[in-house]
Length: 211
Image (tube, rainbow, N blue to C red):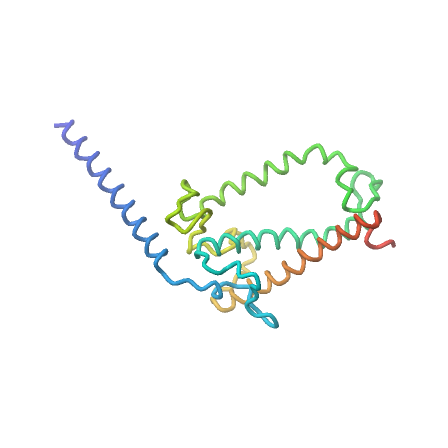
């Protein structure tokens, strides 16, 4: 009798897993069949409007478009931090006795921190591993039927870290789209700005502002 009950439980478990797998497959197929317009994402504003002169978004799946947007948002946030910290650190550098008075592009080489960069990269990698679960199939990144490699799920807002301690994220979809567009515009300007800052210091070998 006990063996029979165990067999029934095992059959019920397998049936439940099969049902969940079928539901997941059906939801994924509905996503693939749904119409997607890349213009529905944030980042489109005057005066350029939707600007894709190279046609990189043409024929791309929703998952690919969302993956590219996720990448853009992450780079934008790093660039915004860098474009602020780069010039400030050159003028105000109290750490290590305030003796490290060099251009920012070589400052990290003048401190003991240069030996800890592998640790920093490792910590970043830990977070990035968790981002794998934003893909359509976290355990099958190369699933070709989902439209190609690295497909982000449609229910994952690009750049959403689930971290908003101040409650700044608007609940209204239109207001949230406007805020996301502002963040992207600032981030795009910052990416161009930090590239220019580094290029200037590489060319001159001097600080941005000689105060």
